[in-house]
Amino acid sequence: MRVLFVAMANSIHTARWVGQLAGQGWDMHLFPSTDSWIDVHPELSNITLHHTGFRNPPRSPKGVRFRGVSLASRVADAWQRRVRKEEEGIRRRAERLARLVARLAPDIVHSLEIQHAGYLTREAKQRLGKPFPPWIVTNWGSDIYLYGRLAEHAPKIREVLSGCDYYSCECLRDVSLAKSFGFAGTVLPVFPNAGGFDLTEVACLRQPGPASARRAIMLKGYQHWGGRALTGLRALERCADLLGGYEVWIYSATPDVTVAAELFAESTGIRVTFLPKGTSHPEILSRHGRARISIGLSISDAISTSLLEAMMMGSFPIQSWTACADEWIGDGRTGFLVPPDDPEAVEAAIRSALEDDGLVDLAAEENLRTATLRLDQERIRPMAAGIYTRVAAEAGGRR
Image 1 (cartoon, one colour):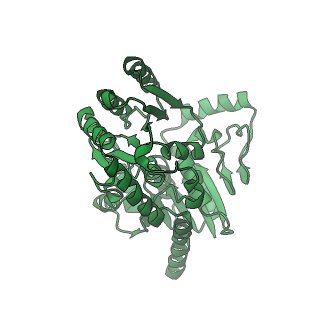
Image 2: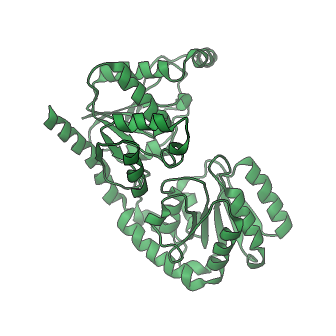
Image 3: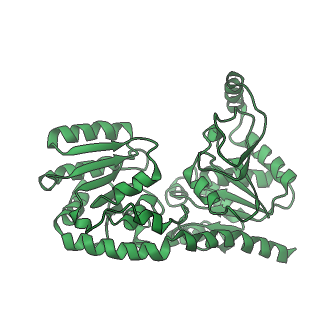
């Protein structure tokens, strides 16, 4: 089977999804949905990358084969600026993708994410002018839930969803949204885009003993169009009277969060540790496994991977209700769902999780049971591979 992915080559989500398919013996190809392919993710492997003439990355991940024109760095940079200036939207990239589809004749085209990969594939399909392979669209994060409410994106999303054949996502919420945008094809099984986890391996990273004995708090540090780490930091400041002996660990901190956190530490005396960019995934899991509480706030998301990590590692999750966390945890029982822009509500959730040891310990037990049932990679890998065998079989049956 030959599968052509259209996706961000520098994304951990792309690398993890493709990694689930290792060992199938399929011929897998990747057309980067953005020109940031230079930063090919180091975990991406066993795939042919069809780049667009820019310079090769400084190191090639194992098993990644490059197809395209290699140029010296200075020449490549000049060409990149010229191409970006001359391109009208994604027209030229869509033409290149259409030619690749015609040349490769893949059995399946799979767009991972909508705003780049989905829009690009839609344009390529329109330009090809002949029957297009079965097209799977996967919804990432805020692709529909947020962008579907924006005037610039709503009609484009409708065109993508009305033009594709299969739809995959990680939230039941997004299935309903896709149908409201005109999707009339086949909905594939709903499970996390990040894939599963080696539960035996991650168990070694959890701190032994009750979760209530832990004295650290994890905070996702995004503050941008979607992230609301400053709300979480302000809520923690309001809980300073309960945080004696605690340490706050912040990962993926944006610059304004770094400044605010340093001021927080100076004014409260509470120790703050920033996990540097590039911190390994096992280390992130280990921190969740030593934290009493894990906080993740954003105005929009699908199922946050950090929420799943916290559940698996026994840390009590406090998550914004704008994600589909309600499909994984019970509000007030196994976690708290909070508004992303209300520090008082987040403060109340933090106080409850700090003061109620029984709540935290029971949540850790129940969340681990949920993770064991729903996040085991040995369960999810066959589900991921089954998507392609199903689509290929149904396409063969229609011929």
